[in-house]
Length: 625
Picture 1 (cartoon, rainbow, N blue to C red):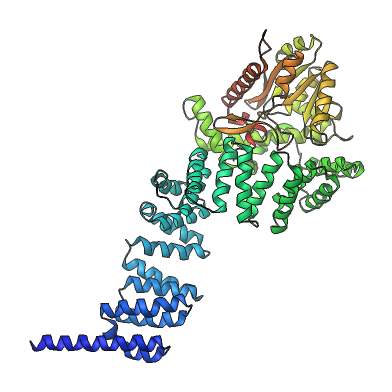
Picture 2: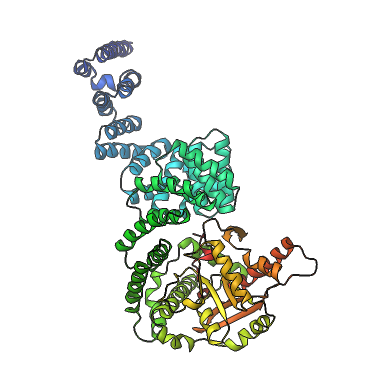
């Protein structure tokens, strides 16, 4: 009985003490309140709850972080194993700028209660807000399997893993989330972005649209939906609407502005694209690829002088980029600056010629030492590997060996261009590696005998630049379309129709004239003279494909052949196949589809000839990343 009376007395004393603590704290007398908040008083659960609710929480709302910290430290001193108090103290200290100390308290809370996903979310948030991306990634990996049970933790895990480029672990989380009906808009955004990175655009689009329909307002949600639609070939007007809605909410988002600018170019709204890309470039002046896109927009909008000024500066900053130098040269020509363009071209040829040491065969052999320099995005390699495996019915070979051979093929075609352009007097070394030319062109000769010329179409595959050389060696009168600038010092200037310095209408006129003159005209019909080039679906992707050649064949009865060079035992051979001709009474849509089907059938045959024959640059590959 006596003991019960003593306990009641202590409880009463504690209750009186906490009432005084709360009153003093409310009056701003922090030190007096702390003096009464002794360890025995702070050890009582009811008292701790009141201090948290009536002192700490109001202080945090009011931004009085020091007051909140002092009372939390007393509560923890009385009960060091309180993970909730440690977590709150850590958050307060982080907000106060004491990141290391705050992180230590948050980590301690997590160690005491590792199964508390709310605490895990706060711990990961602190890591994500810091700069230790590796630590954030490792933490996210530990909670990957459990994170779908806590929306905020799952969202932060996906953010941390995306920063670290860990798509595989991200997909572990996404697989558990993608079919849920209760995703928050923020989590839906992260899930959709992972699906896009994985090339699962239809799922990304479905999740993004659902989040918007349920009230999501993030501009990044609109961007995800727009990007998914771009990949799938969605309605251009709807894509543009999503991008403009996103811009209304995030007018300084550079990635968004870039995507909007590219889409406007695709829709031929070039002047608006210039305005959008100029704004993006001003916001991110160090992004060279953004300036390149602006220069492209300026060219398409016919602001040639301004485009030349911008490209001249970019070319001076990066004199070792052949692609940039070529684009600058063609822009200078469009601006009427022929002498300057020729000077740039001479410099380009001189620099590249200095690297062409030894024989052509020696140069080919040295490519094995530079495979890492092949300009092929990983996503493109993954796509091509998957497609090659499906077409073959099995994995063609060891993946690394396949990738290396694909990179070699890309570099080999670039070497061919450099050699023919910069050392034309040594073209015989390349010619010595070409096999079976006469047999390959026999059908083309018969086609030319009809007196209408001939169209020789090809994809961006294999050693492309061997084609015009082989035709020249066979004595076939020909013209070839390419983006190379047409200036006097170019070795093949007489047979070149340059797409980089002429409008589409001008190019079309040159092609028609060449056909009337009885020439074979070589066209890579998966190329794109502008961002507005038409696209078709192929293997779940939208790729550039022009019906220009098919249209000429249908209307004019021009004979057409697909011509594809390919490597075999590091020698070049040629595949030539007649393309479909118009059938009696056949309507153009049916003919165009048959022509397109025949083209992509030959593309698939080329894929099966080996990875070195893919090239994986330009044309159908351009939009696959």
